[in-house]
Length: 277
Image 1 (spheres, rainbow, N blue to C red):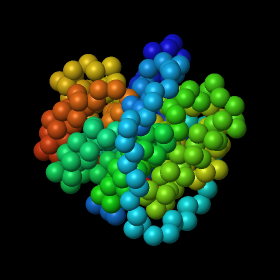
Image 2 (image 1 turned 180 degrees about the vertical axis):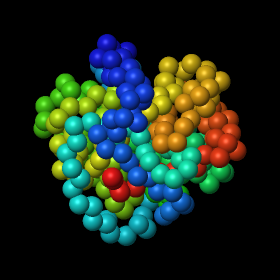
Image 3 (image 1 turned 120 degrees about the vertical axis):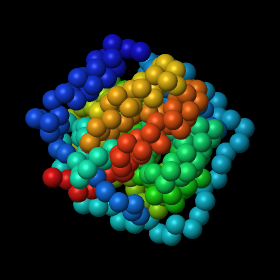
Image 4 (image 1 turned 120 degrees about the horizontal axis):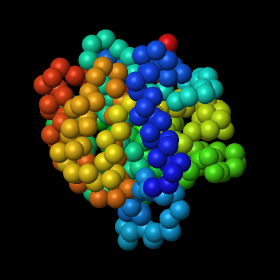
């Protein structure tokens, strides 16, 4: 993992302590009720990696969502990503990056369905394009599908034109599979710049980061992931995990352990809504 990635992750984690005072450039008002292979996904390790060949099968998109819905009004151009949510009571949000993966994502979706919990999935376009049926399932089961670029590059090293292409291609795949374009965006590696904020807003997306990083991509062990989620649990927390980018069996097992414990502790797991204060 490169030095700038470490700095970015440390900056986000350190920033949690100042969230109450700073507001993180805008606070997310989340929904409070129940609403509404190709290559392995890009890993959160070093951005430089050789492309892998797609697997022998390609899942086809399902139909039946009707005409795509119109995108909401353009959000403001922010200078920082949203780091936390607000709402009544003990609300939290679970997010999963880098998928969808044909092995791990269905297992995560099965667990969420078992406990009737919705989550947010920030998908990479090149994975989504080969697993559109999983995007369709996410939308059908009430999850939010966000944009995590096409190929998981380090945006701070790309031209404005390349950043737009990474975002637009992914939004198009999501819209075809889910019936509407994504309204949320997350920069790979948590590396944001002004161009990313501007282009995301132009495409109708709000930037959403996180407050608790499970660091599950380092495969620290199922118990460690569980401990990080439970120790970081608090009203307004946004948890970062991954459903692709490597062996995510620990992430799957951890979710099965900490999710019922969070619910038993009185937490309500929800998804973001576009209502900002």
